[in-house]
Image 1 (cartoon, rainbow, N blue to C red):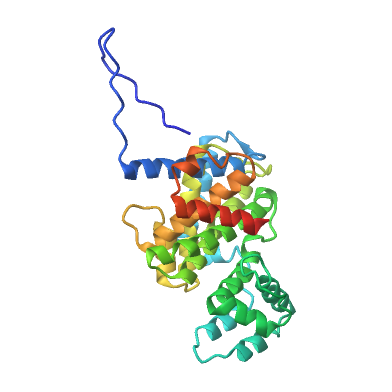
Image 2: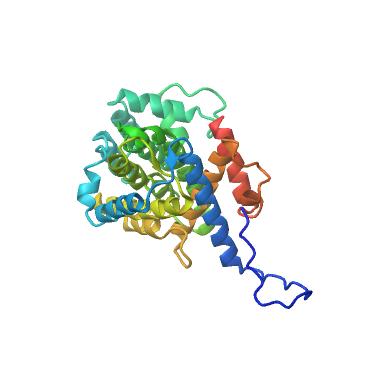
Length: 321
């Protein structure tokens, strides 16, 4: 995963080799981020990736860029959010809404009832005694916990959409990365003085464009394969984030979330974008470790994450289990 050392130029015979200049911290961080992106894309496309002709890669990227300028058309390629979810999210923004009011709304959907109770009993909350009713579950989750759960329920069909070809095959892994990214981003948010729920929402939303991009690739590569080169992968991941941002804006997401998705990982980005970039990096490393692609002691982990981020990496593994 290390960059090649630049060739010595014009050094006289028997002259000692000059040491390569140390990269600046920002450059090192960018190199590590690029290595993680490349490793993630190669792993994601390992079974179906192939050495595609340049014109195929260009057609796919052009299609993604076109949709970014036509977000209404792009939004039409993913399912609608379930009707009950926006109503509940609206109620959660009302400080006068009681637990009983929220429980009544949740009780209207049996799927939500099961999800809320299951979440309250999860390893994340670790209740002393099993939670058995909606009211107790909502009190355990709290307002932010319930909002994050509802967002996750709403986004699941957007990522795990019924598609064909590679998009269908990749969807479960993309969804796993989305959930892990959302949680990791929300854990990064307090230390960066930014919104926890907004970071969670950005983490869930940023991969919607990637699933759409894979659907476009399936239309162009009709044999179920997808271009597998790292360079193409880096361009596709970047273009799909812009597409996610455009769709988020079309759906009237908070502007801070729209901007964070568009600018995550860029130098000088705001705190929400930084929380998203850190969460995305942690989530991708978690998937690569769990898949056996890299080890816990790989330089991408030891050099790419600080102590708190490594604890978050470990917490994602515990939650997976």
